[in-house]
Amino acid sequence: MKGPAFDHGMRRTEYTLFLAATLLVTAGVFSDTLWLLGIGAWALIAACLIEAIYRP
Image (tube, rainbow, N blue to C red; front, side, top):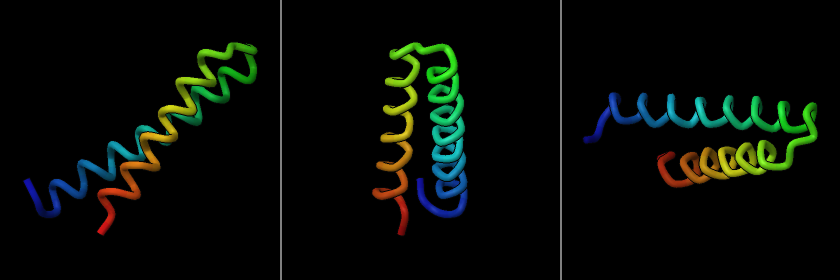
């Protein structure tokens, strides 16, 4: 699948991962929970990889 629909879907996935990472890291900082920080960090890594790989 290529074209504008694919780009829109990947962009939405990327923004969703950025939002999830922000929320999870913030929740982890305020609750002093290391596993929330870890999941947030991995979500941020995944979003950055998607941006690096799928951007033209």
